[in-house]
Image (cartoon, rainbow, N blue to C red; front, side, top):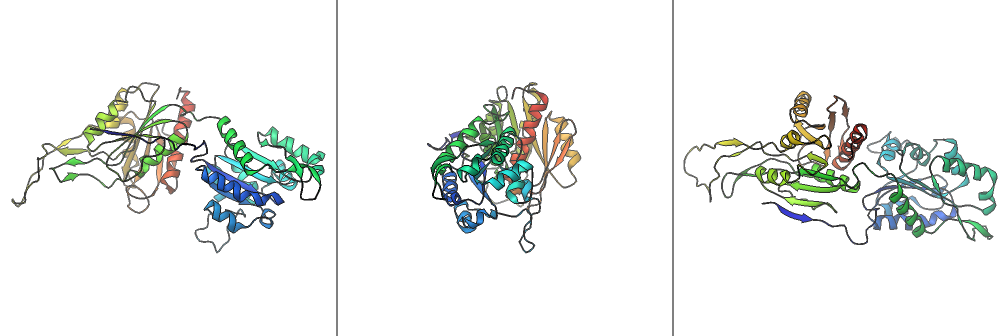
Length: 425
């Protein structure tokens, strides 16, 4: 019998929960306020990375920003040669990672560099690599006459025409001792502007749609104390559930026995055996928009489980196994043209052809091939290496990623599939 748990959103948590935010800091006196902005973002559940210009580093310490963000601070595009685990493409991966970019304070120099398309530091690189439709919020802060100069206004107009959200500075006392326009808004106002931008940004094709995900292992009873199972931890399926919920989907997670907390906002159904998982999944076959089979379902179960405990006696015992239902294939057989089916194929490194065979036989729209090495990929580890195969034969090889990052890539591919097929998903 499935046990139903609904993990509701924590009261007071906003759209920022789970969002990936880059905060860019330039060389202005208002930079001293940004650690407080980072703290507010973290308090709202956001993940924050900081890009600090050389000028910005003169006004706020890298140590303070690293402390409040709980992440390293990025200043140069290329890492120092002595840095452990050098990543020469981090300016690209961070641009893919981010849901929004906030630049505060933005100086006249940075406005000119961004409007010209220069790429001479980490902040400028992230501005260029941020994915389309992700909001960019810019908060200029400088002397009033500087802000009103034709050159600065021209650069602001250029950035606004590119889709950036440029907020005029407030009036008040300035660092120069004068009083007038040029003050950066307070961190609370910047936070509110970011929330509004994320609310108004383009929604995911999965927004408001029903997504059902299976995760974890199943246990097939031999007797009252023994069972057949596998090493699946459920981490991949749970990562997909978190990512789908973050994109606005209505997620139902059907999971076998795992030691993982329910993702916020996700309806969780706990089951034990393959038969229980199949029964729970079949309830949603006719009404879900997307079904993702990420569970490691046991292919076979003992034909007749023994009540109580089998006593040790005979030198050998025989165990008759019967085949379990193929849950994903069952959905694939009956799904409509408006539904999508996505599966996983855990194989050896040479199992790509078998993954393609599963894709066709189960009538899937996309399959994620991953191999099992107990070190970086497969069961009970925090990383994965996926190859995404579409029903059109298109193959996308992903590098070694955390399972959360791999889940985002998988959902990116699913969203692209939705758009290409013009499905009402």
